[in-house]
Image (tube, rainbow, N blue to C red; front, side):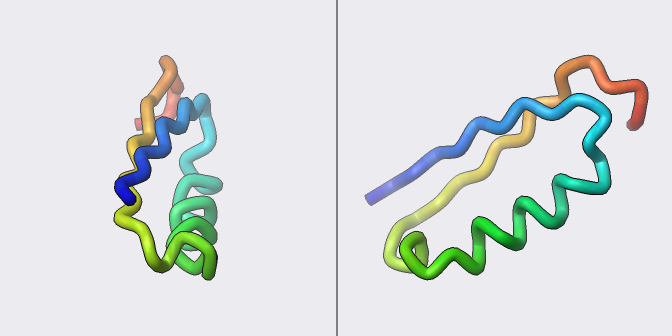
Length: 46
């Protein structure tokens, strides 16, 4: 199964990496193809 996660972020640059790795390590998702799309919602951080 293909799964897309659309994740809006706002000034969360440090949390993005942790979230990404947590999703990738999740055992129940290992059998699926997972796409994670982070959408910058007007953050001041580049």
